[in-house]
Image (cartoon, rainbow, N blue to C red; front, side, top):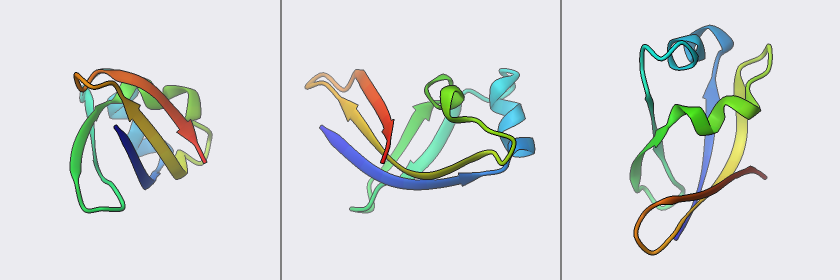
Length: 71
């Protein structure tokens, strides 16, 4: 399964996820499906501006994480 979505989280807002205070990021894909994604998958994309952009999340047939890529 593939999910395409845009996200905009400031650096300061993402610190709660980075520090482990919160563990899931709520997203809505381009088809209106709501998902909760483990914040650890977004860490490689964190910059001083936060996390910005359009992403593709791929899950296997069992709903397990396969990949997250910035488009």
